[in-house]
Length: 494
Image (cartoon, rainbow, N blue to C red; front, side, top):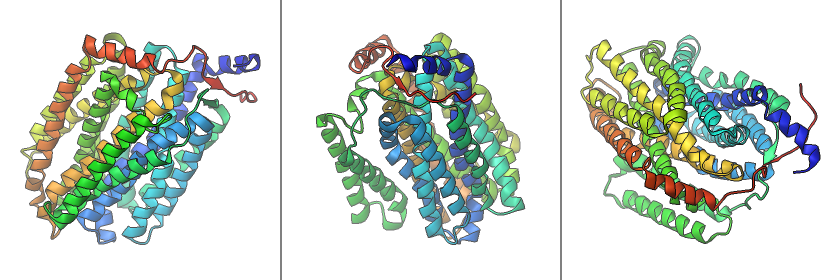
């Protein structure tokens, strides 16, 4: 980096500027996460307005998360190559445009199509924002605390989403839940232009179209098989063929990327046990969150008969606990490492899901609220160690790709959670949602309990001395000389 870059870099790395950049980047996770929680609250209204089936509701959620998961790694590597601030701004523009189109969609087919537009923009936000944060916060302790605050924003979106979404659906229409993204998106665009420094990797990766195609085919075919399985039959030629095709695409993806000089999916990252564990835990945690939001929204509104606003109030305690647990988890992470928050989070997810396996139309409010609070504790505690483990062991030049893998794991989990629990509950609602849906959710809650158990096991295995040694060896393969991150000079912006 030339001498003329030094003053700008020093400005970017002052504490005040770092916190400002963190706040701007957190706006991206706010709009993306807020969109997920708001749309879940609006599902029953969309069901009535557009005469959608349960499969249609699943696609309303999964079309977004599927495309998001498919494009995250491409967006992360592209940002490392052409500029993180530039890609981040483009993502905000496309996401805001997609939100506007969703608000005016006249039918379910176009709503799903416009959700895909949203996802294209969303894929440029969270992994790119996290790579910006990774490069700005170089001190490990400060970075862990920043990531804790990042996780708290997810909890805030969980708190605001059901309340704001319920209010908008009750007072206006389900269409209003998409319009709420616009002012946040516009503000983030302006602030990014003013304050976020441009940065890129010194030796960025080339485009990998074959790898990107394999990722899309593998994830899309798997999701399609799960969602359409109850209708077509789990043992039908269509379902078995799609599962086999998905497996073949995953195998081809790994084989191809191992031979590719600059792969889209850096398989060598997974030689680090903590990184692999964080990715697997992210899939499990967000599958649990996705399944929880999908089942719980339909249960509260269609079984308990609550309005969207009152259904949002029921889940508010869970969201508030997530807000509190995430920054506390970040502090514990900075002081004691990843094991305590991982074990606490896994135990909490397991306990909450076991409580909800007894769900009935007349389950007491107190029992529900306790289960929701415990679930919020688990989800809030787990997000910071997942994110920190994914990006901390990698050099700044690989931050975009590493953060994209972590974000992809989250979205894959969310997609599969909605697809799987929707599929196992789908039989009883083929003719419409009703009181029997409470009993139909039980297998889904047992699946979520199993995910909590897996998180516990992975938390134990991936925080051992052996796991730390694999992380050190893996990071050394990608290590860049200190100061290799390239910041571009630009005029001062106040």
